[in-house]
Image 1 (tube, rainbow, N blue to C red):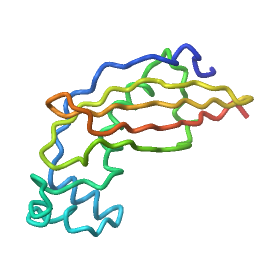
Image 2 (cartoon, helix red, strand yellow):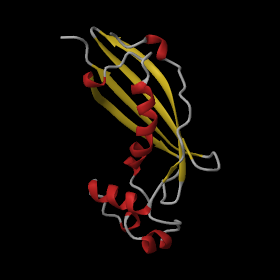
Image 3 (cartoon, helix red, strand yellow):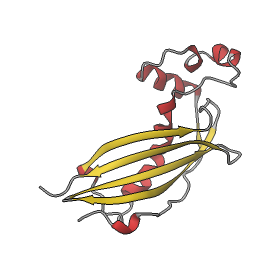
Image 4 (tube, rainbow, N blue to C red):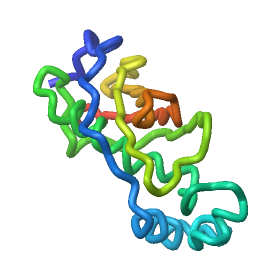
Length: 148
C-alpha cells in the first residue's frame, strides 16, 4: 500500500497537554550531552531569567512524538511504520521550552511526495503553551521505503 497523497493538508487533533518535568529535561540534556548549566541546574536557570531548567532545543521531539503517533496510527494514511526512515528534522522556536511548561502539539501534514517507489511525508507540529502561545514548530520528514 502506498502513502495516501490526500494526507497533504490534513490537520490532526491537538494532543493532550504534556507537562514538561524537570527530571525529564535533565535526563534529555544528559542524553544529548548538553552541558549548559541552565539545562541541569534550577539555580543557574533562574540566574539566567528562567522559571526552571531549560530544555535543549531538540527536546521538542519528545512532545512532537505524541502528534506523530496520530499520523502513524492513521489507517487512512497508508504508512507502514516498518518501512519508515527519518529523513530530516528541523525546529523553529519562539522561546525555549522550560520545565513546568504545559505544551500541546498539533500536527499538519505539510507535504506528501512520491519518489519512484518511495514516499516522503513532511509533518509540521506546532507546539503551544497553556496560554496558546507558540513555543516551537518541529518539522519532520519521514521517508517511507517502497516495496522491494
